[in-house]
Image (cartoon, rainbow, N blue to C red; front, side):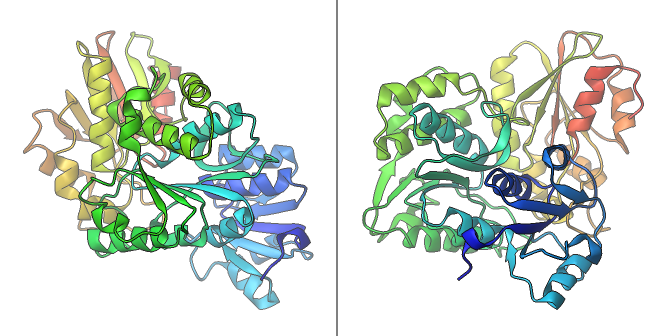
Length: 435
């Protein structure tokens, strides 16, 4: 087994991603020499560069330093990637992000937050509670935490708090003492064969918990029932903590459930309940989760949200309708992945009921090749069966022109896991900006 203490020079392929940049930052803050590459700059990658990491914005075998001792790569990297091939040629130790995360968190009291929805916000809430309790945790999360100004915290305490992703069963690399399952839903169907397959991954993860470990979840949720059966660990029902959740700065019933999960974790960790509630009151949220971006010159308010699954869209729009009961709510939605859009087409089409208008822009491909059988136009056509005001537009600029007449009675949400946040930023910057 690789001894992390013996590794000093580490190279990251795909260093700009949320998880990869976080763990690269952690290594940098722990005194490692970090290098990496990505296909384009990101705020996270630029931050690492500014701190002193060497980053290339193209994939090339020569990007791997001659003295590199290990290479970490994202599963989004193609097997033909020249840096991956070079690392294999040199015989360097190779780790996926998930494998390396398991190595880094090994030996700590790991708190892993899993689930189809709500992982990032719940991780941020738990991190705030544990930090405010003076326990100095390390944190790896798939979003920028406002309270920390980062997606990574390099603490010196015993606790390692980590967002645990189910994609490709990557969370099975972790060995948590406290595991949270926020919920289980159909997603990542480019990998999983269906809900039963997804449940099997969570069953395997929960089944690894030992008798003195803790699982925090809603055991009465029908989808979780097969997961909680026959476990050795203690099972804590987070719904019992909902009544204890204080007034939050972040809106929505889904955030209430996330906060209840965080309080349950705090209780399992022996943190004072009053202190935990106080920390939650101060939790300021995560970037790209109901994030207020500003106003257009006309007075229309602009928000951005990472929602990219039908359940997340519904939850965000329900919170928006509660926050803005008398305003017109508009959505600019950028579907994420051809496979997700295609496989969940009917669910997506029916998920925008709380919006007054929905504008679909082209699908963000991410790691996938184009699929001619699915498009935003097809999604818009399906959504028209549920919603009277739906259009598909070809670009951000088309969307900007569409909202040129928006006023103080309008609230515009950009939604999606791609780069649709740039549309929100451009709307705020100027009504006549070219995107």
